[in-house]
Image 1 (cartoon, rainbow, N blue to C red):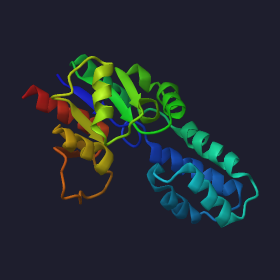
Image 2 (image 1 turned 45 degrees about the vertical axis):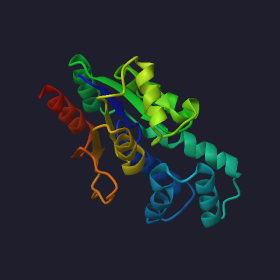
Image 3 (image 1 turned 90 degrees about the vertical axis):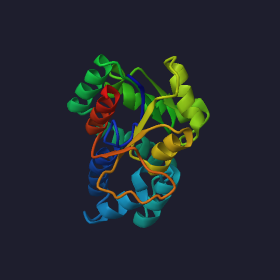
Image 4 (image 1 turned 120 degrees about the vertical axis):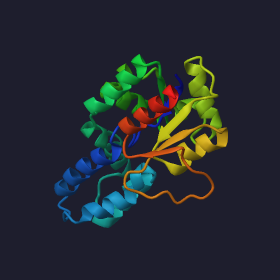
Length: 217
């Protein structure tokens, strides 16, 4: 059974759902209209927008006097408070581990924040280890971060699977290494003609099942 390198945001944890819940409460707190939720989700761009840039956009739109650093702290700490590990995801990881798969989280982001999310949600109980870009000194899709993940669990990178929702960071990284991959489409169509995922699924549970089925063949 293979090494499985799995993304964190919107793969193992529902980062988008947690941000949406936080955003609704935040907009209510500052007296913004409910329809501004779409704007805030758009400028957040699934977390790809710098927290400093997002804080500045929010301050400018609503003419807030709160310092940017306070908003940045809120953006870092607020949404994760709404995150929970789906029990079915935990169950799928447990079954995969019992079957011999070795799941390792590979995520971009700040070490302190990502560490906290993994431990606070209990995800740490279901994975063999994790690698975070800030601590590793290299980010996805660079193959080095995936190689570091394999080293962490003393396994060869050859034959590993990469699972994630990002076409560039996850599937692009897998393609650069010649590894099979599973893309979580989240309602999107695949549009990149440079490379393509081995499997396309709706969620990480289906992704783990697909890998187990492929390994059994």
